Amino acid sequence: FQVAPEETGGRLIYEVGGGQWDIPALRRLLETIVPYQTSFHDFEVQQRFERIGERVMVLNGRRIERKDGKPGLILLGIEDITERFMVRRRLEESEGRYRKLVEEINSIIIGIDQNGTITFFNRFSEKLFGYAREEVVGKSFVGTIIPAVDFDGMDNGGLIARILTNPMEFYSAESEGMRSDGGRIWFSWSAHITNKKPGRTIEVLIDGNDITERKEARIALRRHAEALYAANRDLEAFSYSVSHDLRNPLTTISTLTGLLHDDYAECLDTEGRQILGHIKASTAKMRRLIDSLLCLSRAGRQRIEREDVLLSVIVRDFLRDLKNSNPDRRVEYAIQENVHAHADRGLITIALENLLRNAWKFTATRKSTRIEFGSVDRGGTRAFYVRDNGVGFNPRHADELFEPFRRAHDQREFAGSGIGLSIVQRIITKHGGTVWAEGAEGKGATFFFTLGER
Image 1 (cartoon, helix red, strand yellow):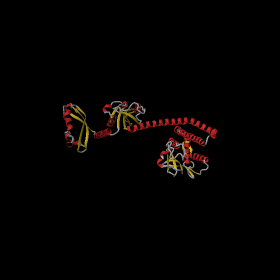
Image 2 (tube, rainbow, N blue to C red; image 1 turned 45 degrees about the vertical axis):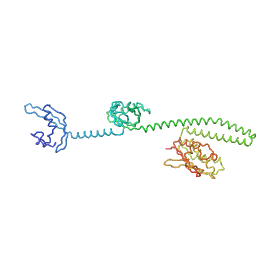
Image 3 (tube, helix red, strand yellow; image 1 turned 180 degrees about the vertical axis):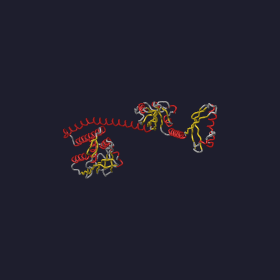
Image 4 (cartoon, rainbow, N blue to C red; image 1 turned 90 degrees about the horizontal axis):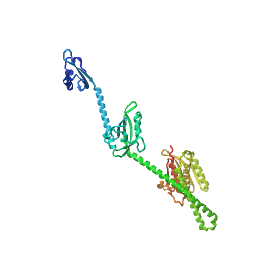
């Protein structure tokens, strides 16, 4: 306290240091308490001194009686605890700010002890779950705030038990929450060990956020996807069944028509033979349509088995077959060499053949046919393409080209089942890719596709 010995001898304590020790609390202690008590302990006093500034002291004193009859003494112990006091005050201020933050933050903050019992429940939690703090503190977190097993089948009781028995691990989860009114919400949360002893958790702080809207949208989307999958599966099964069942009567019609032509054609007049020809042509068209429907159904049901496939060879061989079947057509090919893809060999062959057959059909009215195949980079993704110089299409209807039985041109001019591009789209989608068309009327068309390759 920066007081010299000569300043103290024979003086009242209140006079020491120029009267700075004349502290009202000290006077009360020495003049009122000590005469009636033999001692006092841990009496805290705060005083500003001229030389050393504000100090906080703890006083301990004992009255000592002399045996020689002289006036008694007071043994006064003075401990300067200023630094300790300042640390304590900073901690209290920090704790106050922390509690204010925890109370006012728009997040879930819940404390639980080693038994899973709620010890703290902030205001946002009160608002979100509909409970007042006093209604939940002292109750089990599992069963009050979250169910033992939630909608997704998560064992919440087991999860909390693992957190409490493994204090060094960090956990995060999404859980179903139970409101006081019986409603359900969803919240994401993480657990932090705030107080622990070796091998035993004392307190866990849970912080989280309300994700009800996002979770419900995700659940609705999942249910919609499941319903859509079931509907597609039923539709594919129906298409396969109907197509398969139609083949038998169609085969009978085709066989009988052939017998009628072979054995009785001479008995028919010109009109009769024309009618017979129409029946045969319609039967053949119906067979192609059924085969296309079966192919469309199989494309949706078949499992993908990827391997390295050399697409350039598939394209070259199929175009050669088309040329051999129509040797009089003038055709020019531009096939990029060594184009590989990681795809299902059978399905990608079907897709390419449909695209090439499409290009072959819509260039039939040209004096000279040109068909190209290759791959390009489109926005960082490799896209494959089949390009032709055919009649093209109205670009406003590009998306409609892949719908079953939707035609961009008159069937009398360009015959077909109307399912070929639908088969292509289903195969490409099954690979995780996309397919699209670019073109203009009278200027040809280009069909691009990706295969979801990583």
